[in-house]
Image 1 (cartoon, protein in one colour):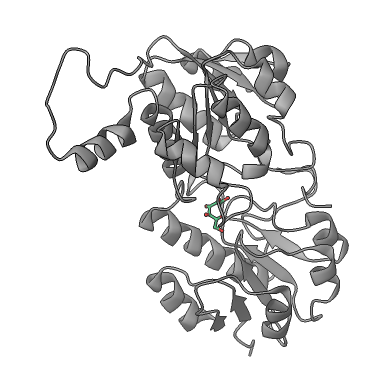
Image 2 (cartoon, rainbow, N blue to C red; image 1 turned 180 degrees about the vertical axis):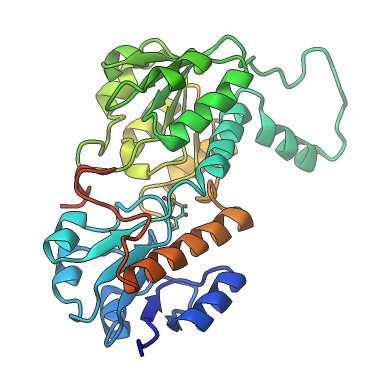
Length: 338
Ligand code: 8YV
């Protein structure tokens, strides 16, 4: 009879998922609160079949070269896989899977909430009540923000999440523009009335809010560079629930500090978990809204992500094609970290 697959899980997962894994697999979970080092991952993988990784594990070419030969599958718990050197993994004959789709709607909800948060001063309003306690009450001119309806939203990356953001933005009355590797089919285009741009620089000059929804690859690293931030309309906003490296964070901070850009709502940060103090100062001044990498953080999404990991492992170990196998031609052309 087949042995139960032996798996290393690098981070705690929802209890129901850990329980299910424990019945299906010989499961070894890192119970600590922090990510494992590469050495810990390698030590933990001795005799294992599968590595269940997350975005906080750096699976680079060196680690892949040193993997025990028993490891054949890297099953990422998450959609983005920029922490994995995919080319090195494929070259080593490994199968890599992720958990797309199940987090699409929740991530789009968060992007939309962040989009609303700055112009409508959501966080600022709460902070004011907490600080003032003795609130003077309503007045015709207090806490005025700006209307979303009629403004232009520029979506960078019209994949699953970008499309779900466009659907929500449509309901807010935003005019939708997008830049994408390819123009989406009319089925997506027509009901959303979205305008496709093949030139990102040109789109940036036309929109009031830019929201990033593209995977991090070598091509998209700092896709919102200092030069591109300067092409944005004065007084516009940036939203990022994707990957911090998609934008030049220092350049963004400078343009917020100078007042060139009106604001930014960010769920992800360079140098995490040590957030740039200048960004924190901007948050205190209510020029930015910061959330703690929470865009897919619903219990429902995390359970479904765990279920997808289980299905991928089961299929692979039974000799089938895992449903969410990443292949060189889709959906990522290459990894970000060379
Ligand atoms: C998770 C995410 O926080 O899936 C992604 O790309 O950023 C989030 O869903 C993370 O990936 C968990 O590994």
